[in-house]
Length: 196
Image (cartoon, rainbow, N blue to C red):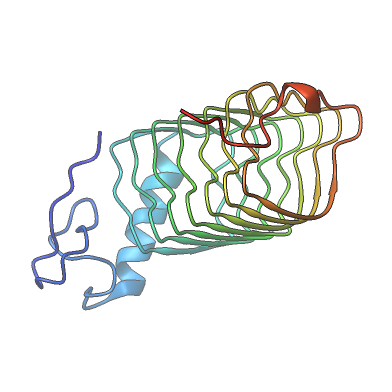
């Protein structure tokens, strides 16, 4: 799992991997961004990467493997995650705009409080993933396995879950507008929190 070294500037945010400062306090954030992007491009198997708060645009993460990484509060615009494999990583309070997650294999991730706009998760395995409090707009999860994932208190607008495995998927307290569940096993999903 990534090491959470605090930023040397004293802001309390985690320092970027290979550096003693967070992304905000970098003297040359463009140079740091290029260093991280080159590292990702050259390495298909990435472990313990900490890039909290970084902004990625038009980056191809496809077919990469990520283990125990920290992408909290990061932003992704027009990024490709197709056929990516991600385990035990954090994307809390991140932003994803026009990102492609098709045929991805993501398990034990947290997207809590994140925003997704115009993204595509079709044909994916999205198992034990936390979308609690997320805002998800104009996004497709069609033909995906979402076993035991959480959309608790999420805002879901214009979303499709067509032909999905929704067994033990929690939608409790979610706000749903124009959500389509055609040919999915909604009877096995959880729509209300169980009383203790």
